[in-house]
Image (cartoon, rainbow, N blue to C red):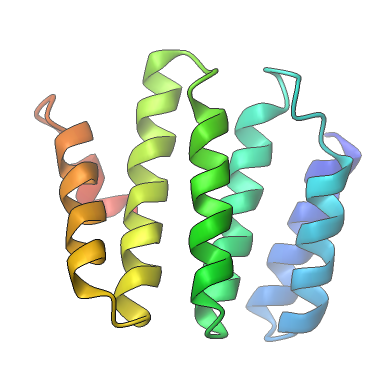
Length: 130
């Protein structure tokens, strides 16, 4: 277990306990601790980015959440296709959620449709990933 993952786990716990400011601080600390150039760390980095984006959406900071998800999606392209597809679907759903909460309905629908398109291989993953 890397230090970055341990910090991310502490952030998730803080978020579950309702300590959102502490959770945000810890998620950001965790992201700084990851090596984004390492394919080994990249999935966990992206997962932590998603978790922070969910928190930011929860507290109404939609634009920050959307930007963070877009940045993470650009990194996902470096991963093998099955991992990349799963993470992309999850992030598109989370982006759709943030856009929906920000009342950006057309953009939200586009993100959801992109997620559905990624899941075209006949799975229902796009429904449960968000």
